[in-house]
Amino acid sequence: MWIRSSAAVVAAAALPLTMLTLPARADDARVVPIQVTGAPSQRFNLVIMGDGYTDQAKFRAHVDKHLNDLWTIEPFKSYRSYVNVYAVEIPSREDGVSCDPALSSPRRETPLKMAFWGGCKEQGPQRLLTMDSGAAKKYADLVTGTTSGNRQILALANSDTYGGAGGEYATASGGNALSALITPHELGHSLGGLDDEYDYYQRGVPGGTYTGSEPASIHHTLLSEEQLKDQKKKWWRWLGEPSESGGTIGRYEGGLYHTKGVWRPSRHSMMKTLGYYFDQPSRERMTQRISAKVNLIQAHTPSDAPVGADRTLWLETMHPTGHQLDVTWTVDGKPAGKTHDLYLRALQLRPGVHAVKVTVVDPTAFVRDPQIRDSAALTQTRTWTVDTRVKTPPSDVPEDFTSSTPTDRAVGAEDVVYVETTHPVRRSPRIRWELDGKKVHADRDLDLSRFTLTPGTHKLTAQVGQKKLTWTIDAKAPAVTYELSKPAESTPGEYTFDGPFTMRLSASDDRPGTVVSEFRVDGDGWYNYFGWPTDSKAPFLFTENGTQIDHLTYGKLGKGRHTIEYRAIDPAGNTSAPKKFTVTLR
Image 1 (cartoon, rainbow, N blue to C red):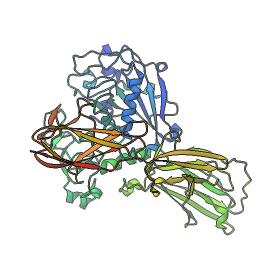
Image 2 (tube, rainbow, N blue to C red; image 1 turned 120 degrees about the horizontal axis):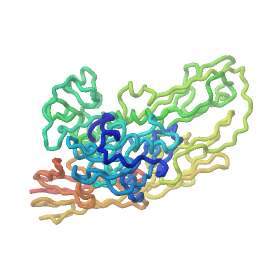
Image 3 (cartoon, rainbow, N blue to C red; image 1 turned 135 degrees about the vertical axis):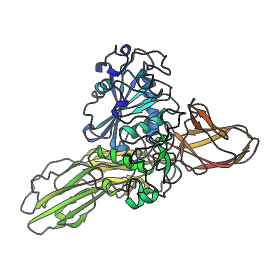
Image 4 (cartoon, one colour; image 1 turned 30 degrees about the horizontal axis):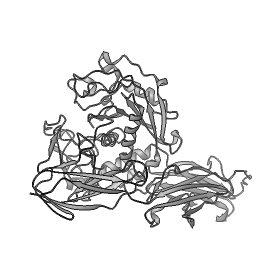
């Protein structure tokens, strides 16, 4: 939300002495796995800890809310399978955090020493929420197998006040109406190295004119659109495209806490306005950073010595939730296959030595920069020397599954479901996939978007030998309805108001979990329906000029006729077809 450097999350030494009385005691805390997709050493690990919670059930409810929103936002939605999530429940002697909401508010004794005002500093912004980084590390170290290199710490404060920070670690208030949207913004800082696109530092105070040189930020520039294209700089590859956060990717003045003299790619991406999505330049960076936290190739046939031509070469890769990776084998430079295993015996190689290579590429449309595509985050290769004189000894490896898409929760109708198996040397186990009892062909991944699944529940199975895995497919989109305050006039789907009006969206699903509602106005970007900034249970208020809350404007509609679309996303990732109505404000 504010400062991207590690200074944003201050050490205990920077806090008032009255706040240093409660050392972090790791033995007081409990680690609760929320989502485990693989060994911590092979995944990006999100470690979420709470501060100022005497009730851990409340902390877990806040965690669930933040995650439910996170999994609807790209690229977290498509790369959910790359992420392990662990909650660290830390008992606190009292509820709340320090200096909340005012500098005159109590200083509280909490394990992470979280505090607003940048650590109770008069010169700090009120919503800058900091913590003791040393204490956070102690608690994060309880999650076995995670290190500073493969994890991201997110600390939630037991607070309903708007606030957060991004730097070495990310923080967010747990219970504010906008809190779950603070988290992906702060991860944009901490994980993505993205900058704020605000045109102010202190709200209500214009940021002035930027006078520095070309920013290092990937999403700020001094260049014109023509210069961006001519020099092939920054977000030139995305120019002119509809922005994922509304409008068109172009050049919009304001950012880096300045009102003028510097430009950003879109009107209101997440790094400027909470509630919208990452725009394409920011989403590309986030995709790169998440992917770089794992190895695209997880395991493979040993390649440190020549192998025989009588065996199968195998490969285990990551498996994005939203699409499949491209796997390409070559033998002596010629194409040899596209599956995860290469059965050498079937190739009938001529006697001698041969070079085998496999290339794995993530073809995601979220990335256009070839340097990012060709980096180890999205492209990896492995090579083997095959010598036909080498005879492979037989092995007694039973056919079994070794990992898979989790079976304990429903998968969405557009998901890619995967399995990995054991690796006998002669031939890889044959995977028998069945969808609603009918055989379907697939390798290690089955892309459910291949099928036009009827709304409802479906059954997917995968079997090797006598071992079977079963998934429930949730192919039913959630329901969402709207409720408006009383109009001056109305006909079905069209409403006229002579002044301010409210809109409440109510979403439901046939399965447990939080359903996230969204709306957009006149074709602009989809906007998270969080209720109202001061009360998540209150409806959203539209007025001609908007409502100012803490110097930000919400619900500005303007006079005239407007189209409002609405939809919802369920825990399995199914998105309902947008519906719409029109309003006229006169």
